[in-house]
Amino acid sequence: MLTLSKNARKVLPLSLIICFFVCCLVLNPQKYIESVFNGMLLFAKNVAPALFPFFFFTKLLTGLGTANTLGKILKRPVSRLYNAPYESGYIMIMSLISGYPVGAKLISDFYSERIFTLKDCKKVSSFTSTSGPLFVVGTVGTLMLSSPKAGYVLFVCHALGAMLNGLLYRGKSAPVAVSAPLTPQRDDNFLNTSITSSILSVLVVGGYIAIFSMVIDVALDLKIVDFFARIISPLLTLAGIPAQTAKPVIISLIEITRGCQSFADSGVGIKIILPFIAGLLSFGGLSITFQSLTFLKQCKISVPFYFITKTTQAIFSFIIALIACAILY
Image 1: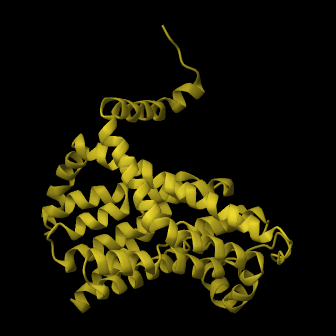
Image 2: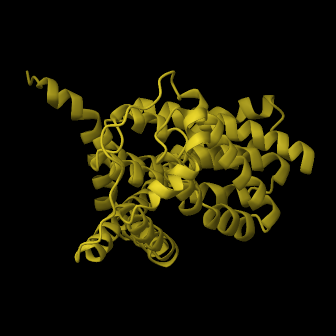
Image 3: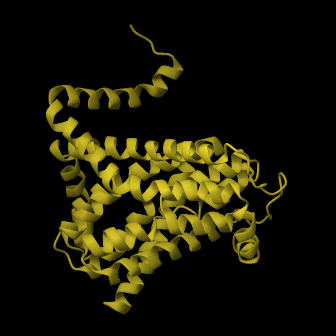
């Protein structure tokens, strides 16, 4: 009888999942290679051109000491509200402007520079994990929902949800300085280092987008999405919510961009789908989760803690959007 070591048993479920997707590729290579290609195309055409400049310029601003300047301006509200280092105000602003996963990348950078402790990283991650206006207002609101107004409502609810979420994880103690403030970097290689770091970070994001494009198509082809949609449909119907929203919810939990498009195509009124989009946008889906955890893993932020913070953030955003829709629509 074959006995597995403790470590082998630990990785067995993940190994089986990976083998399953390899089998899918072997059995239907044309379909799923095309899925990956479509993900890479989406990344190359829409994500990389938008995300790379943000990664690059935030890296430059961080190295030039802008975090200190902007952080000091926001020092009082950030310290009082979140018991967090004043540099976290800079991360919050950059995350709200740039979107996923810039907040996680900056937290990782600040931890590497010994500006944040592990405890600080946990606090700051609870209110600096957001999407940006380019995606929320431009892509979701204007292009998908054909309503810039809906995009602005979404973004405000999404931002407020993140800000309120940070209050849950502020703790009772003020941050303890672990080093001197981040010093400006003006060496000859700083520009090249910033470009290299930004390219590698963007490629990580692109890899996840390509892989999760295939994951969604596999889940759709094997009716996995339909299976889970049938499970939650009665609950939605019981709450007076159209059953057509079930499938978009499941897709959004995997990849938020495809999920938002699915909501837009569902035919359900904007007053109903907007709170769902706001909540799921704050949760981020598995694709964004893996993108963020790639940067946060060196800060020792655990997967359960990350999921808990994102779930509470999603609840805040959902409730705020529910109130906003009741007033505005």
